[in-house]
Image 1 (cartoon, rainbow, N blue to C red):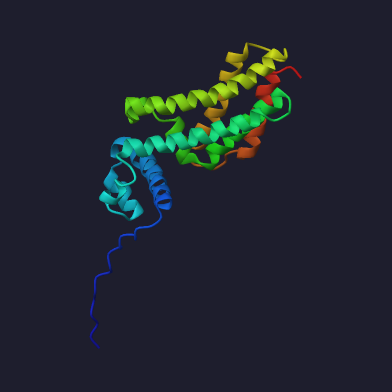
Image 2 (tube, rainbow, N blue to C red; image 1 turned 180 degrees about the vertical axis):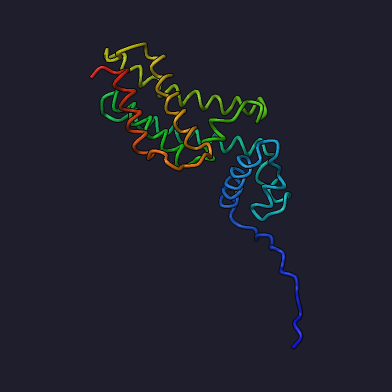
Length: 212
């Protein structure tokens, strides 16, 4: 019996589909490649191949990789800004609102590690100056909403140490540090549970900064 060997078929290009779905696919693929290969190592060709489209088709959705990275960053920060705006409007005391904001911030980072690393751990040199300013402005608005809620705690005379600005920076930096360490790609062997760490850190921070 004679067997005829044939080459496996090449992966076919994806059919043209819904623009919003394809755009989401591109953003997801780009996240993985930016994190894996770095900004300089990521190329439109690599992103297009990951999605299964031609570079020409990808350019129909984005002008360049700067625009892709900016949309990833904008999406992440806009999500947190909307969350902070919603939480700040709740009819509960300021301490509870700040704690919920910080908990939501950390959970977003832990649930979306690639997005978080690109939006909050990238350096200005990884995106054009003009587009970095756009992302920085969104980030400033997100932090300002948080800062104003911390200021409500100060206005109630409930800060044990420091002022609203120093308290807000300390709280934000601590949470950013925890998420950055947990999403940095290191092995998880013998690591404490995320829920345990988040609760313990927030309890410790508020005990040291806020008067009950």
